[in-house]
Amino acid sequence: MELRSGRTLRLGPPLGARRSCRQRTCPCYDTDGVDHISGLPDDLLFQVLVRLRCARAAAHTSLLSRRWRGLWRHLPELSFRGITPGALDTALAQIARTDLCLLDIDVPESHRYSAAGVASLLRTAARLAPVVLSAVVRGDIDDHDIPVEVPIFDRATTMKLDVQNLYQIPPAQGGEFTVLEKLSISLCRVNCGFLVAQCPCLRVLELSCCWGLGIVMVHSTTIEELDVDGSGWISGIDIVAPMLKKFTMSITMDMDFNISFFAPMVKDLSWWCSCDFRNVGLSEFWRLSQLNLWRKESIWGLHLTIEMPNFETDVDRDLKQQIAQLPNFSDLRLYIVTWGHVFGAMMLNLLGICTGIQSLKLGLERFKRKACPPNCHCDQLQDWRNENISLMALEKVAMENLEGSRHEVDFVKIVFRCAPLMKRMTMKLAPEVLPSSRGCKEICDIFKANPSVKCYLYSSCGERVVYA
Image 1 (cartoon, rainbow, N blue to C red):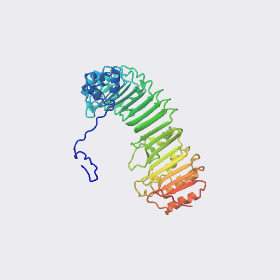
Image 2: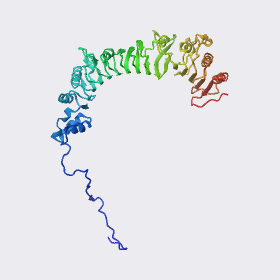
Image 3: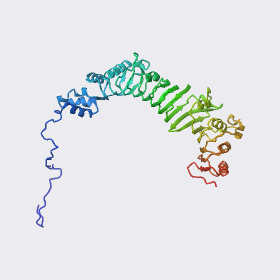
Image 4: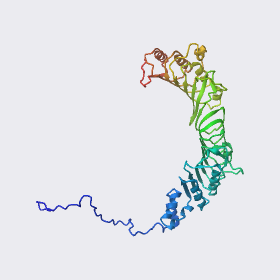
């Protein structure tokens, strides 16, 4: 098309028309249609298959060329995920190696194994002698009492056994997992003590959501890390582990729960224990609900949840006796569910055996605003207001959700009186309490009478209350 200026305008192809592109001449593009990969040496083909990280995908490469057929059977690392039990059994029977580096099995949740089926699967896995084994299968709940023998894996250094609903036992003929260093067991019943005794090199043990443990017994001269998580009702802890450095536990205590613990080198520890039976008491009325013992580096801490339950429970254990069995702690955190009751006598009773603490944090929860009735049993021991205990090491105190009631103010006075070396006191008021209330003013007067202590008072929304 020629314009009036004499120049020519070249029109492009009509909209939607296919444009021709110049063929790339880069030498990295193969245009001869020849399969250059299948002709590579076996060791290079193995490298390709290993990077697929899936036995099924590796087997499917046989569709490309006969050259690939059966190569997957010789791979050192095999992963079988999302396949049915029948297909898994067929595939395992075809594996040519008996010195696997990795065997990873994860059967879909919709497929259930009988106890005999799991036992057969584990025997097949043991024949392949993997260095690392991970087996995730779901057992038939009807077979939960049938023992499933875990065979010896001679070369395994790491094992993960997630065999849901079944009861796993060590091999009847004895023997040891001579090189096993890390063992993870989930969602099954297991005898922890017997199994650990057959692992002379075990360094890491993880028990997750196991049932029927009874007493968690670990007697080992090599174990360094122990994790017991959500494993049902536990009747006791029996630990003798001189090399243990990290211990994490989250359990529910049975009625007769007891502790025997020897681990002089532990530096990282966290125990969370729920006392659902409310059978551990402090005085006649208060009950232990939760206990959390922790250690970071050289600092030990204890966190207790204590309540006065609104239902009757029998007490067969004294909380003070249980605390006496624990290591000396310097950080004490208390969460008290008062239901409106007076807690002063109980607190002094507890602090009387915690005289070495350096830090105290007290959180209050009532769940109802109605005060306890006159002459309530919680305040029958009126002389608690005149008691003295030794808190010579206490330096920091924090209290939250205070209402400024008479007995709360009296308790604050006692803390100042019994902790002469205290350096810092922080308080936070309950949401319904105004800084202008009588109790708040009394607390401010206590602060003014102790100028050597840095005192801070905050409203429930975090705004600092000026009392000077």
